Length: 172
Image (tube, rainbow, N blue to C red; front, side, top):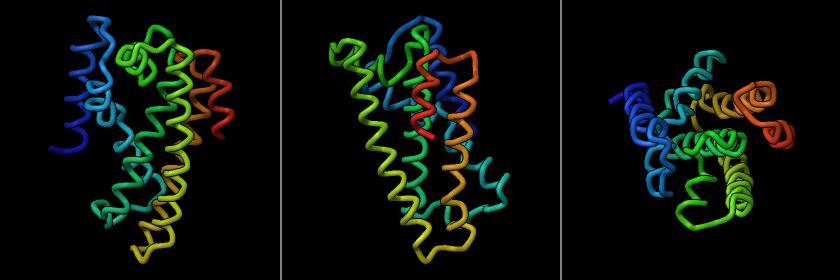
């Protein structure tokens, strides 16, 4: 199955099982669906094309670690910026699974994002410094460009709350 097919299946499952019935996922359900339904691997592929740095090392273990970290960062940024009507977020999954107050869950997700941002930077440096193909080393910068564009868009999109402006300005 391709990344696009996996994304369509995960997005459909999220819509049918959680969004339409207004059901908050458990942490396990969230962690099972979110990495794929977030579409961040597709975004990484678009970045490859847009920045003309298509990597022949897509399946390399280090590159895959960078991509998983990129996906996690993007999903957590989205989840922290989401409005109260969006119940399929890491904040809501933590709140439901662990019985946390919304502010406690938000703080924990923010801490996860901060840790994953550090991991992403470390992996990005490792890929750029490795003996991989030149396109792969250039590709290592590409997800960061997308992350900044995502933060810019989140600040002005009517989809997100006013708190998103504070969050995304911190991440830039």
